[in-house]
View 1 (cartoon, rainbow, N blue to C red):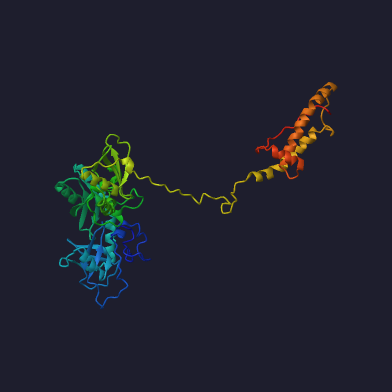
View 2 (cartoon, rainbow, N blue to C red):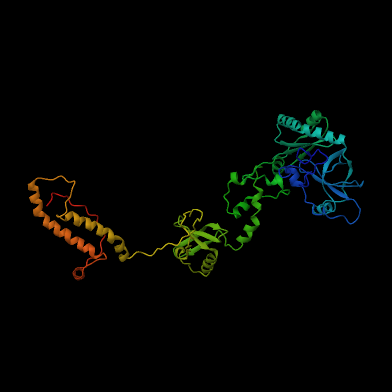
Length: 466
C-alpha cells in the first residue's frame, strides 16, 4: 500500500498508468492519482540500448524520491524495488522511468550527487514483510495518540509509516506551537522497540493525507492533484468582493481555502482599470462615497452621505470623468442625472410554448362592423321571425292555458300598441339583412341609427287568443 490503495502489494500493480493492469481505483486513490506523472515519452524508443539511469520511486504519505539504477536493472512503471535507506532498506514502487525522470529532477531541482541507489527487485519475502508492517500501522497510530495524550502534549498524531524492513517508524504530527517530545520519543521507543522518527507537517498536508469532500462537492484538491501549498490570506477574498466569513472561507484543514488563489490573478488584472474603492465624489447634491464594485460589469455603486439607502450604479469611465472634474475644483452633476437605465431583455421559454397551433398562421385582422352584421344578421332575423309569429294573432298558439273572457278583452285593448312596436322593430332589424324593400330603404336613409349589439328578447306572454 505504498501509494495508498490496497492492491499495490501485487507485483503487477501499476498506479502510474490507467491501464488494465494498473490500479482499478486510480481516479479515487488519492495518493496514486496525485503523484502520478504522464509519461509522454513512453512510446518513443531510447536512442541506444542503454537502460534508464534514474527512476522515480513512490512511497506512502505523498513521499516520492529519485534513485539511481546502478545495477542496470530492467525497471518499469509498477516494479516493486528495494532502495537504499538509513538505516537498512526501504520498499517502494517505481512510478516513472526513462528519459522523463531527468526532466522531473531538473524541474524540482533535485541534486544528482546525493542520489541514493536501487539495490534490487523486491522478492516475495520482502513483499510479505512489507504488507504485514502496513497492517500494523493503524493500531500503532492509536497507541501513539494515547501516549501523547497521557503526557498532555498539544499535538496530534496524523499518520504512521513503517519502513520497508521494519527498522524505523516515522510519526507525522501537527501542532500549533513547538512541542517538547523528548519524553515522548523515549516512551515510543520503549513501547514499539524500534527507531523513532518524528516529522511535523502542516494542517494542509494533514487534510491531504486524510482526504474528503469539499464544499463544492468534489474531492479535496490537496488530496487529488495539488502538491505545492501557497499561502492564502484574507486579501484574496477582499479583492474578489467576498464576505469575510470564516465558516465559508475555511476548508476542512481549518485554514483558508486554496481555491481562493485560483482566480485571484484575473481579478487583479481587471481591478487595475478601476478607481480606488475609497473614492469620494463631490456633486451638486453633496458628497457621494463608493459602496460596491462589480468586477464583471465594470460598474461602481455610489450613495450620498445624507441618504445612504439610495444607490446609483455608474460605469467606471463615468466615474473617472467625475474624478477629473473634481480635480479641477468643480462639482460634478448629480448622480441621478448620470444613472444609466438598462433595457432589460425580454426572453421567452420555447419549451413552455407547447401549444399545437403555435406555428400556424393566424388571421389577426380586426373584424369590421359589416362582418359583424353579416354574422349576426341571420340570427337576428330568426329571432325577429319568431317574434312576429308570436305577435301575429292569426296563428294559433297551443299548449297555453286559456284565461277568462274578461282578461281577453283587456289584452285585446292593449295588444295593438304591442303589435305596432313589435312590427316596427323587425323592420329595422331586417334592414341590416339581405332582402329589403325600396320603400323601407328610403325610410332607413332618413332614420339611421348607430349599430348596437342586439339584446336577447324574451318572448311576450300569451294572454289569450286575441
